[in-house]
Image 1 (tube, rainbow, N blue to C red):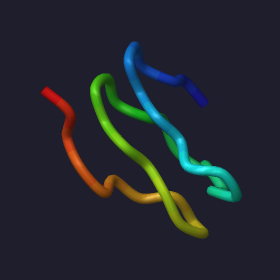
Image 2: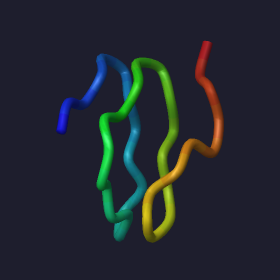
Image 3: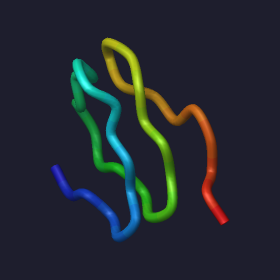
Image 4: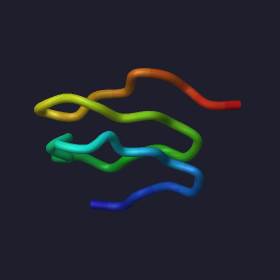
Length: 37
């Protein structure tokens, strides 16, 4: 699993896939909530 630059992962999130750059991930399983600019 790779975590992109400037990526935010919410507390308690279960990351199962790569996290793209400039994104906010949350949930179980983690999913993209918002793209950050």
